[in-house]
Image 1 (cartoon, rainbow, N blue to C red):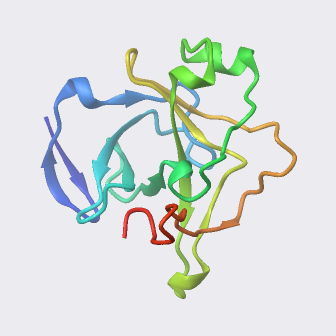
Image 2 (cartoon, one colour):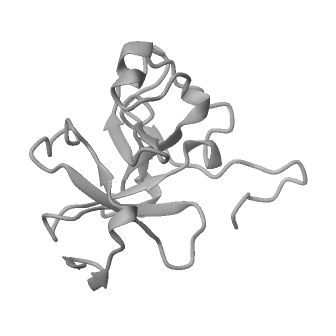
Length: 151
């Protein structure tokens, strides 16, 4: 099937790539179907694109690329909604906010997007960790040699 997107134009989507969000995403509860699109030139950033609304596309990333020790505490009840028993079995992504000044970009560690790829289900859940905030500074994790990972 073909879908229209704001940033990528019209793209072909394989039905098996659609991720269903029974509860939607915070702020977009009425949108239930999304796909992941790779960000050109980056193996860290992806776009969570609504299948039903071309204008809704959220930049997301694996939070461990920025915070290697990221380990969200999610209740088992929430994980079971999408058929996950342990957070280690899920794909965890966090939404990035990029203001006009890109140096002030942030990542939402408090409300990760948790995916069950085997069942193509997802939900945005609240991490119970008190140290995680909605707006953490975006910074690349450092490799041991002192160079940026992903640079």
